[in-house]
Image (tube, rainbow, N blue to C red; front, side):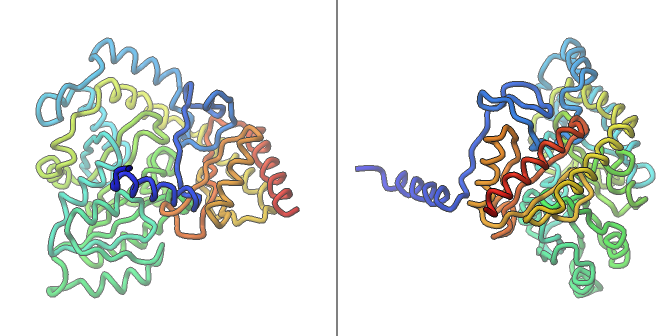
Length: 397
């Protein structure tokens, strides 16, 4: 007789499979690039967040090899023990100066964006505080909000008027002790940009903080400086998080903010205090990446041209193309099974585009998340658009 506990898990997994929600891992057999060797096949890939094509850039490879010979391959301990190297320190100073969310800002490195967002919300917010979060925020922001034990109000996506009503009700002497407006800057599954100027106005009006997760804007928007620079925003009330494994092409994340905020994270953020520091060689690779980002206007211009070409070539598809001007171009298919079928049809044609399904996106909005990179060529975009038109004609037929 089988173990009832194991049988229960197996039944739940089988149900996910029937609903088209089961996830599988692909085995990549080479470096990141527009064409990937996946499970024995070379596919034209539109699945990576390597927006500037830096993940395999020779300058970063050289930097990490040189750094490995100098620093070794591990940090050995957490930042607060003996894991904080001169390489980490230099990268933090360079990131703070590059993003500059306020005068005199400092930056703090984390091993992932997930850990960074947990740190921000759990170290700054607690009981008797209020978090106002966009309904489409990334899961790590939601998890950080829950772990903070603050009250959490998830306002309708991008709805500044609804947010104004809700935060207004929690202001004044009878409201929350601290208030936080928390948002993705570029929403990872929709590709749209949050109304950051209006959100900052609300934060300042109601004595609140604005927490900005710029995982998908850093390196791409605002001359590479991210979404704050895109809108020309600076304030001591902004807490900015940027990831370093997407457009920066390496790994990790950072928080940039007023020095008092950063010191609060150092002293109280458990996901910082109790995590081994990333290897110094990673920090040196990121310093090389940051230099390329700062000098990356040609890459960003090429990426913008690819986005425009994709949108033009797919305007007549039967699926809804969401209004995004970022490298994230979502095609909403509908049901999970239909999205998986379209993704599978593309893969048979030699193209990799992942199907994104609930709970990552709302029910009945399963989609293809087309992710463009400066490493792609215009001919790659044309090949994808032609394949999508062919798949759509087969579905219609």
